[in-house]
Length: 81
Image: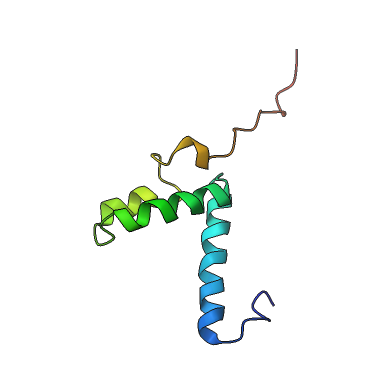
């Protein structure tokens, strides 16, 4: 249903790729907008054939900048004594 308004199979595929990147960023506690901006800034300047470079840009990478990350949630399940 998300691709109901895609005019072509290529458009539907492109939408699916973007949706997947955004949802994976969310699952890894990233701010999707900030993460996409970071990717758009970095990708033109890196060797995309180098697997180590690509790994460093993935949503679960430990070396992503802090501005891409959501603030850590406080543990509200701990009981107060």
